[in-house]
Figure 1 (cartoon, one colour):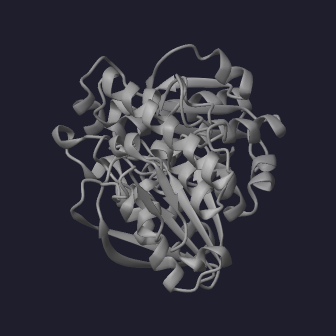
Figure 2 (cartoon, rainbow, N blue to C red):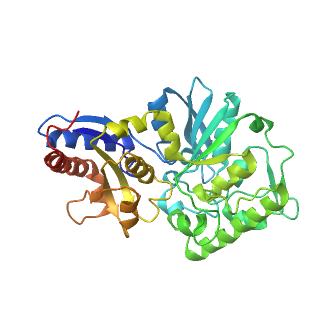
Figure 3 (spheres, helix red, strand yellow):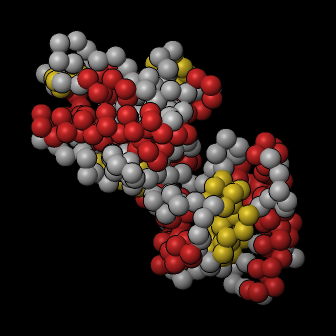
Length: 385
């Protein structure tokens, strides 16, 4: 069998590389004849994007400290590829949910300032392109903190600079671009999205993702109104409509902020990863079976996530696609219509989230072993290699 393994990470558990390795071990253990396995770890704009692009293109990583989501310094990094011409930044590494203990999460106060500091560091390195991974955020400030770090002034009606956090956007009155870092006009900036949500409304950043960042329903509504006010002022004072922008709600509205203040283009992160590898179409065409993996499959999976991109790839080449999932929620019919052949949960029995996280690698191996046995039976051990 010729098998293409293209998983996402299992959040708070295994990165995409560890997931691919576990699946590969299980496949080798289950197949009677050694399969030809090509592992291509994936990312969709969230955690792991930098490492995946580095794996695909080669490059270096620079470490630095930036302002974290709750205002204290955090260690972060940016990656350089294409001979230093392109910088890859993960907003999760400067303003990510994983940087904030559960009891301290507060999207009313969390800031994207550190993301702006990473962009500024990339500009100091004289890059020509900056890719910003939009995923895993602790913030809901529309990229306001990022904008302030890049010289943009956001003031209230009294002329006072806004403090950090999404709650402050309620008081926004004036957007002053006069001291914006002029170097931004000399670089191409791409926001790598893992979702297609717009900025506001029932499907916007606050209501969909605010709860996981610590927002109660009342706080989520307040944040949604604040972002709508922010988007309206952006349109009135800059002429840019970020309220209807697909992906504008990514990373607590950072997608909208990047488009408004850095002229960024928003693209699915999975498309950028495919481009970085360069030969995904060729590898899919040669595969007898494609296997992906996702920590959780739910209603958001088809909105820019890894499995959505891989499903389209498999469908183009009429290849079977199996997804191994840590958790499944909701109706799977849309996944099957998109190009997924089958979905298998890896947990062998009901268990606590803590136990599932601890044993995820083992369960992935076991599921992949069973899949190899079954696939070999269906495809035949003499399948083309």
